[in-house]
Image 1: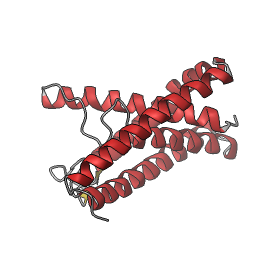
Image 2 (image 1 turned 30 degrees about the vertical axis):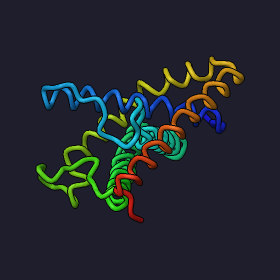
Image 3 (image 1 turned 90 degrees about the vertical axis):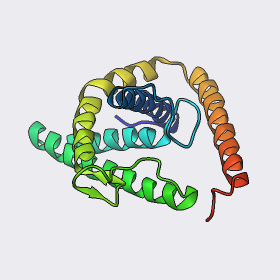
Length: 183
């Protein structure tokens, strides 16, 4: 299925919000206390999860149309998703650490970590998440997004992206005044 920019933007927002919720629930259970936000944005959104969701869907779609074998397609798409998402997580972690001089996440306590930005445990978890997302979650999200009239999608996108830009600007300004940003 080909997606236009409007639908990709909708998927980005849905996966960014869903990933934030998933991480919040996971962290709250693991740390046995309520965790609200660890990231750069102070609202209920994580851009990295939005990007990863889109990358996973694109990889699975490309593998489905490239390979004849359903099993081969699933295995290659899962390995590709693990690799792509782990690379995105590593690069994002390094850049955020370099710019803001603090680690947004730290896997140094886990075995097989790379500079504490990524680790084998969470990379494999991304493989499981990618299969669930591509095979079960995304088809439902796709149907829902396609059912929304274009005008409503545009109004929603303008509003949410405006909120995200204002939020990011506010946080950048706050960090600049605290002398946390050094390029």
